Amino acid sequence: MTGRRGRAVVVRTPDLRIETRRTGGTVRCALIGALHQDNQQVFALALRDGLRKRPARLSVDLRAVDLFTSSALNTLLRTGYEARALGVALALDSPSHCVRRFLEVTRSAPYLPVEDSAPARARRRAPRRPPGTPRADRVPVGPSRGGALRRPWA
Image (cartoon, rainbow, N blue to C red; front, side, top):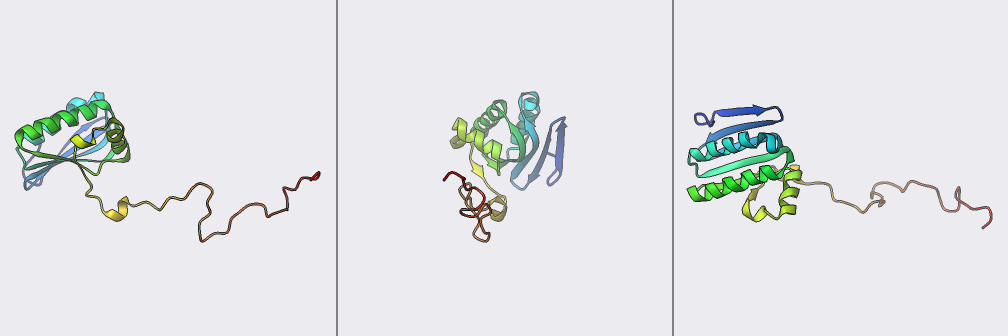
């Protein structure tokens, strides 16, 4: 699946697209779509083909993954085992939120190293405020004290 140096090889299934590219000593597999049991074989073959070239590093780009299931995790863990046996460094590149959450819940993050290659400003979110807290630049909206919500009997 990995073509000549710099050329991308694209594999498509109905809900998954895999782009594999070799640059220097790194093979990068970019995944776009959903990873589940129905496309597990295609995913596994793409990763094995990347390992077959014996690169120094295999990078799996998961930033555009919408669905990540246990079969995808199993494929990644098996590939990590094979990569260690071959002396290839495996890294997950910028996993999406659902992938990060899945790795956190299953406690499998120590077995699959994660690297973030996305720019820092793209990863940052606005600081979170507790719900109902007004922004500093706005005046609170709502009824004024003692106005419309007054009870007639009080």
